[in-house]
Image (cartoon, rainbow, N blue to C red):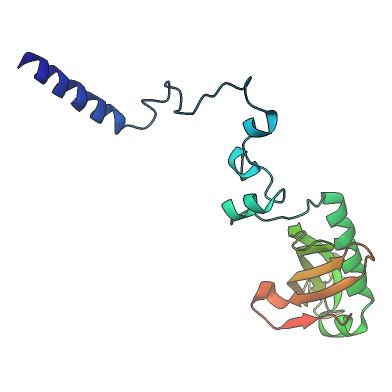
Length: 192
């Protein structure tokens, strides 16, 4: 009777402790330990997917099948992205239809993101400030009765979200669109 009660308490204790995470973390994980001296090196080495399927998803087909959410993207540096943004800004400043419809691109206000969705393609997204010329002067009175100033009060300014794709080999812009008023207005597509 005493022996069965002690076994029952031991099982209950293991069950309770097992329900808390990290309690058995000090125990080694159950693995098969085989002697490697009798086996050839190729039979000891586990397959690539078993080692770390998320370490390098582009390494093998087995790794891609075991980690379906891993994406194979090329890394893009900030310097490459800045060159792409400068190329898009230059194209938008030179395009006559863009100048007529959106106005002059004054400055890039915020870089939202960049990357390489496909090999050989650089994708950039940023906010840019466009200004149509000459509208709206402030009527700030000058001192000593000298009249009013001709200082521009900033009317005619629109912030648009620019989304562009650039070919990394040739440096040409594949597509570029500007969404007016941060995406809530009409879109302007640059002809390439």
